[in-house]
Image (cartoon, rainbow, N blue to C red; front, side, top):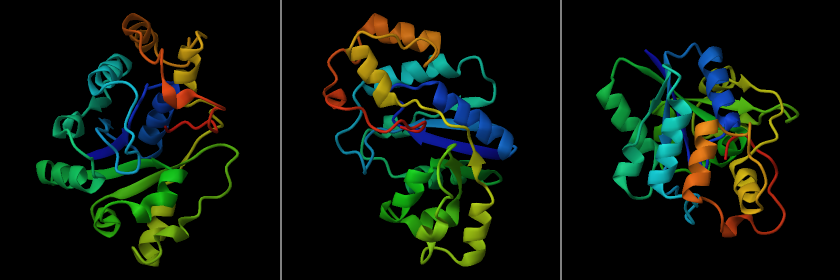
Length: 217
């Protein structure tokens, strides 16, 4: 069993996330992709804008029609700062015969040495890094000192090539706050739930100029 782990705040989930998950599934020949919404990320202590319950509900709507996608709520249930290494260790204990891949963006790779127990994490799971269209070659040298060169070469062989996707969760939140359309940027059910519950109408994180568009956010 080959399983991709796709973690993030998904605040909200959008078509860029879905596109990445599908590209990862095909590139890595995954049996399924397990989506893991974070509770509180150690590197984003301000937390998500929407509640955990709303983010989980949006994911359920977005993933419902794909049998290769599975929602894993363990970090939400844990209800504390989420360390990826703990989640991965739990999953390996539950499914010792499975091979796991961690789907991350190149920006997350660059910060990986700052993660909790990065060396142990890399012993447990293989990162699969998304290279967005227009990006420079991914710098895997950040892993030096954490793993040997053979391991770095193996990780570098798992790159998930993507076209340019000018879309981010923060952009969607800003559009909602401004009363602009998010149609076709997120699944219709997610859009309807955002409207129904009035999510992101007063999102302080959207003030000022939007951040650079990213597909993983």
